[in-house]
Length: 269
Image (tube, rainbow, N blue to C red; front, side):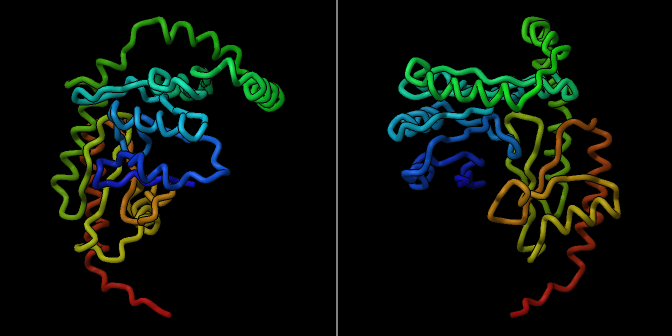
């Protein structure tokens, strides 16, 4: 079950709407903060409300925090482990994002909260991991150095840093487009770009992604691939340099112009 993170709320979840989706079969809640694909960073108040919700319904909190230090313009990251008191909290992270070591395939999960009441559950997880997961031993040697060494991500996300300036290039590219809009990402390495439906009625994110790839050799992720109920958004990454992103937006605009010039598709019964 996917809970809504409305664009009108900065792609933040509404705890009241989330609670209405809970049924007797619900066992856990997944929180991705900072968020992929939207770049939203959830406030302390919103996260606290989700923590209390999980406690009321005895839900395990599964918090994906792999982008925890990738923040922009003063955004504050709040670990869920600091908010969960009367339920089990599983915090997921790894080397692939903050430490840019994707190929190492090293990740981890740490448990906090009611660990003393969760022994059977944790033992079952440990058994499952032992049966199904293979450790990357050489990669694990990098963990101590990564966590204890110089944290270069802060400079990358500050003004003048590679990720900050690439994010700024995306914001500028959207502002210059006739067809695009954006809730500026406050964290992570993505932007979730929307399309003006009044100018491009019937826009289809998958068709646009394929056309952009085939014609302009630009790869994006359709928004609907992230289980959105709408098809007028797509995700791009902040990893390319500014000049490359400026070229990307020129290519996007060319394809969007083509889409705008086409007659609207007729609906058939």
